Amino acid sequence: MKKESTKEKILSAARTLFVDHGFAGTSIGNIAKLAGVNHSLIFHHFKNKEQLWVEVKQRIVLEANNNIQNFYEDLPWNECLKDLFIHNITFYRNNPDIMRMINWQRLEKDSNDKIGVTNSADMEAWIELIKKYQRNGDIASRHKPEWVVTLLLSIISSAALDPNVFISDEQQFKGYINFCIDAIDAALK
Image (tube, rainbow, N blue to C red; front, side):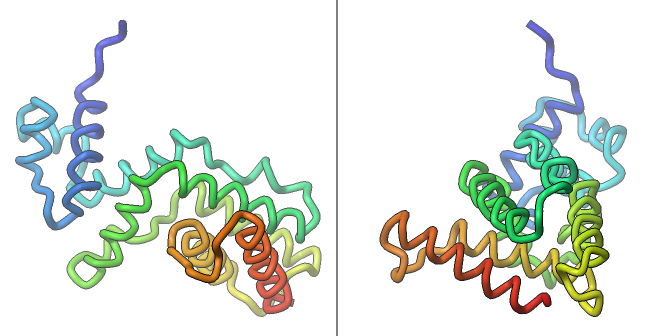
């Protein structure tokens, strides 16, 4: 059995505390205590608490193998959009830790702007995917790719997790997804 590295212990402890208490409610001291490491070791591995937050979020995404670039690049736009919805709704439903961290970000947005959406490799892949569909004429070039990605992620996360009394079964949920896809497609032309 492989022994867990110090960095992995720190990331695991940080994840537990960030998910339960948010960014503001988690101290480096608490992370060190839960990880069973010296406080200074955290700063040996991470520049600051913001970097640790971002790395925990990125680790969750990597664990879920949510890389989109190769998965979608050869699909027609409508199929890509539908697959993006299904794949990412499944990701959010299967990874409640990322949603808790995103909700904490929303609550704490005024106190720290460095813990929000990051320019990760995954985010770059989304942006490049949108640019590809813009070059193909599927999405109007007047739309900033970053804004398109933000729109898609907002609708996807809402569809995945927000309770909606108008959607009472899987058939209605699929209908709602198709409605979202049709509306997005029409808006982005």
